[in-house]
Length: 92
Image (tube, rainbow, N blue to C red; front, side, top):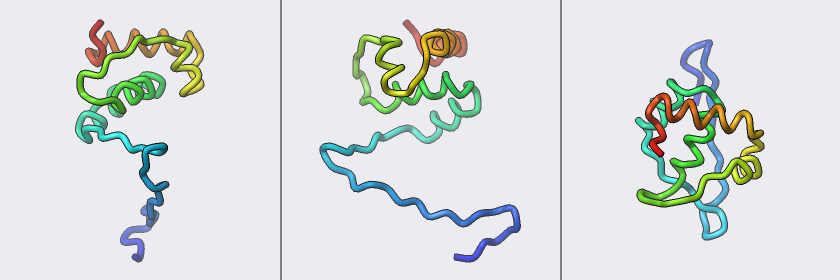
């Protein structure tokens, strides 16, 4: 498909096949757009960590788990948690 405008890049998305070992997450697109616009990158990463789970999924949040999954250091994690709380994305 040709590019329609000079500022565009034609992209084709290739994904690994979905299986029990490699699953996809269903995420509300509008909620994701809203979070991406309102949150700083580290808070958005943490939001995505929550959003990848099913409705009513419960977990015990730990900076160690987030560091192992996303490489987010504790101070970045703490700031992201506070931002999510302050902006109403996380209610404890």
